[in-house]
Image (cartoon, rainbow, N blue to C red; front, top):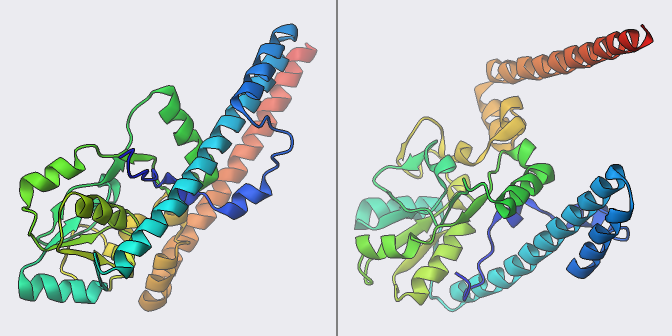
Length: 292
C-alpha cells in the first residue's frame, strides 16, 4: 500500500475548486506553526483556547486534503501508463457483459459494502479494495468530519480505508493466469485494483471503463434491490432525487416518479420551517425566564 502510494479515494469528493474558495492566508502553514498557536492559547481564556484549537484542526485537515490530491494525481499517471502500454485491457460495460456470458470471465467487484449491497452483477465475486472505515480513532474521526463537511452530507459518500487483505483474498480465489474483469462504481478504484494485481503477477486483467455508473440495465445481469447506476448515490441528494441518475430515470418514468421527490422536497422545507419556528419560540421562552 505504501509503496504504491495509493490515495484513500475519499479525495475524490474534494475538488480543487473547493480548495480555491477557502482562505489559506489566515491558517498556519506547518505543524510547527500549529503547535506555536496552540501553545500560545495558554495565555488566554478558554474561549481563545478553543479558537486556536479549531485553527489547528483546520490546518491539519487541509494538509491531509492536499496530500490526497497529490497522491491521486500521481496514481492517475501510473494508471494511464498501464492502459497505454496494454497491460490492462479496456472494456465498456456492454463488452464486459458479453465477455462474462460468452467466455466465462470473472467479474471482480471491488466496491465498498455500501455500494455492493444495493446492486451487484450476477455471478460476480466481491472483494473490496477500499471499504467503509468504522474505526473511531482521532485520525479517522477527523477524516470523517472533513469528508462530511466537504460534501458527504449531500452525496452520502462514506469515509473508506484500504482493505489490507484485498490482495491475499484475490490470490486465495484466483490463480495468476485467471482472466479477471475488474469493476467499481465509477472506474477509479478498479484501476487501483488493476495496478495492485498487475504488480502481484496477474497478466490477464480487464478494466470496466466508467464503472457500473456507465452500465445500462441490459448490459449486465443484475441482482439486488436497486439499479446498478443507483448503487453509488446517497445522502440528501438521493433523498430529494437530485442526482443525475435519478433525473434520467425520472425522465423515463414520467410525472409519477417526479411527484414522489417533489413531495419529499416540500417535506424538507416544512420540517426546516418548523425547526426555525421552534428555535425562535425556545429563544423567547429562555429570555422570559431570564427576565424573571
